[in-house]
Image (cartoon, rainbow, N blue to C red):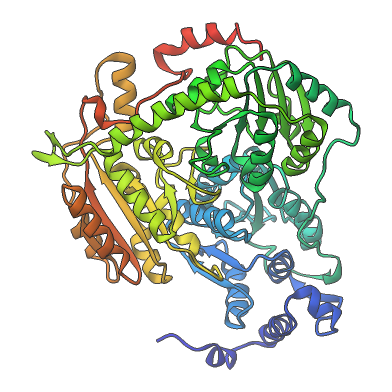
Length: 631
């Protein structure tokens, strides 16, 4: 039987009692800084490293901790217990480290609140580190805190890397991103300063890895609480001189067919990007992760372009003579492995990251905050109408619209694996996407064929209606992302679009979502294979190899075995699927809709691909064209 916080308090040692009083003081004051200012907490205090870390992260606004505790994190876990009992923070216990890394990424991405991930030493840290690729690839700030081997070197610590070298986990983490090993408690201030510089970076945030040796966690040290760093805040920046804007204006003045490639970084500057496009008469091509930066129906929104892309998006890229990259990293699938702009003669690049802003040749760089730079660029250039260019783009957009409508209204088709007629995947995704939009639900897309069709189908009116993890293409991200609502002050209803292959990568959400009262839906599109790779194999070599299996799974029965989950069969028609979605959405908790979908060679069953990709037997062709690019 669980004890209440008040019952637990009777078992406190003097040290824990003092810790509890500090937690109460900061809760009453509204935070550590406020408690210090009010005199409720002393400026200087003797603390364990574990408590100092918790207080330091609370000062930066870290109030939600996703955790899998082990022998490498018992002291930190005990501090978190006290602070949670006093309502200073919440701890979300999870069942898989990759899942909780994704959940933390979604928590930061959707809600703008920085969380922390806690694992023990060894395999758990490696799993969480693998999951952190999603945060790193999408520019999302999350603290990752891993137990580590002791600093005394008394012998191998269980689950450390079994090699006679120092600090191997810290070195691995440093290769992944920015990391700090808390080898001594007095290093806490510097660790947290470096941490906020990474996690709260205004242009390229990412995970920050804190290695917490087992023996330093309970060590005590004098900590100046007033000097622990707050969350880093950087003012909006733009180039100070006018030269770069004059060069950009000159390029725009001579361009006939400009395009703005709006990457994921433009989601926070959607209004300015829209005004810029309208001011200079540019068409706008989106990346998979930036749908909604222009409303779907905006006449200058040419939809997604890239290796998968769309008819209109890829036409615009191929015909453009000037490209304005905004918040884009030049990812292979977004710019067709560098060959997506064969007629472009120059680039204007708007990006806060110096590496990304200088990625292309023949570039005028405009580093800084995208919104601020866009406003300066509007002021530096005359308003221009490019009716011939936008008319040509509009014709291709109409062609894409008709094509998309045809695919989404395709009738059920006979499928060999199911032995009956079932919905095509685009038709099913379109129905679920429209349902989610009508409910005001946010959409998460998993990697694979569901994701590739999904970003071609969604009709977003604003940024952050869809979260598609295209940076690392992490299978299992979408369903795990539903857990990101745990600990949020105002949780949103989410729909996870996942394939059967991706779902089985992280099915732990069935338990963890119930445990933490998450309300959301898993839309599981089941074609009994890794269809994205099947399609790639056919496109390149004309034959499929080892991308499917013969094992049928009753996902309704599987999900229904977990108390608290509502599982519904999606049926074989649009009417049956709509009814299943209504029934699932009515459930006050996690629901799952199992949707069998067609897999085959009929072209109406897919959205198609329109660009190039430097993989497989396409490599020689793509690389030869890359050498011919002006940019």
